[in-house]
Length: 302
Ligand code: SF4
Image (tube, rainbow, N blue to C red):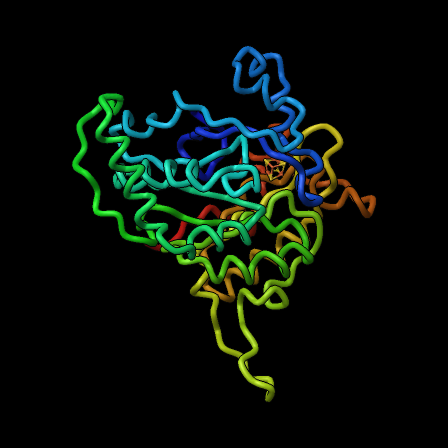
């Protein structure tokens, strides 16, 4: 599905359905979209409309990336969390197998459940399970184009693994887990940004390595940070100062940053000041509306 998410080219949803897990989920756009009249025309969305943890495998979506010849950045499971507890390992293996078969694309995965992702990627026989699914996909006539059986080696070079951290508590919990996941690119989505976040406290920029307060620099282990405010009706306000602080932390640690959107209630609203810039869309996603110092749209260095 083509998308207006600025940091990707396509969304791909071989799995749909999820349930809320932390404050960032309270206005989950996927839950709202799944219940909309437009998506309720499709049987897979009718089954997950209560957003109660029911998940559906959408067979006719699985092979879509094989039909895209031009290299694309693909946001995997924008209508689910690939590592939700109800998603069986076998479904994740199928998703990874498609990524292995399509080295021309970049698969961008985002989860709020990095503990499950860590367990999955470090489990015994993972390589063999993904390789088996790749074999199954290619053996069947269903593959729309002929492909060589890929040499599956973990971590896959074209898979970026990210976690969402909407506040300090989630950063402190999820970043240390993400840092343990074997991945070529690890990234953070700080959206919706709900408060000030100190990445050093979360162990992203430096890690305490001895009792004598010695620190080692580990910022190179996170390759990308996406930041954005909340949008939509009832959106929580996002203070410009929080965004600036994150942009500065990334710059100091030489981590590429991407300011996606200001959100629907940007900046000074919370303390009574009016946002001094023009907002052209309801998500605050037009970069030319941003204050100059936040016009940052960088991608990971590959
Ligand atoms: S994890 Fe993502 S998809 Fe699932 S409820 Fe939260 S915001 Fe929605």
